[in-house]
Length: 125
Image (cartoon, rainbow, N blue to C red):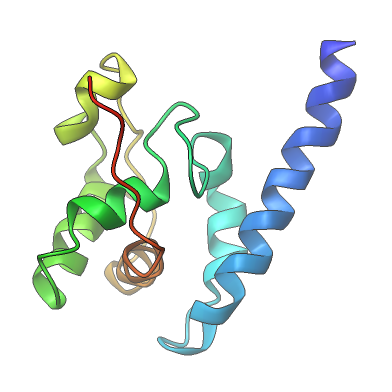
C-alpha cells in the first residue's frame, strides 16, 4: 500500500515542481523545471512545507531582505556544496547532498527560482 502511494505521490510532486518552475526556465536560458526534476529536488523539498529539507518558501523568507546577486550566489553555493547550514534545527541535521555536477549557471538558475517563491515564515523550533 505504501509503495503504491509513493508511486503516485512522487510523480505528482515532480509534476508540481515542473509546472511551477516553468516560468523561471526562460530567464537564464536554463530549463529549471527539467533540471530540478533530474536532480530530484522535490524528493526533499516542497513549496510550502518541510519534507526532508526546508520548504522553498522558507528559503525565500530567510533571504527576503537580502536581495540581488549576493543571495542568489549564497543559495547557489549551498546547492553545489550541500550541507546542513541554517536549516539544521528543522531537518534534524540531515544534510542536503552536494550537487557538484551542476554548473554555476544551473545552480544560480535554481537559486533564483527558489528565492522568487512566496516567502513563508518557518515554524519555531
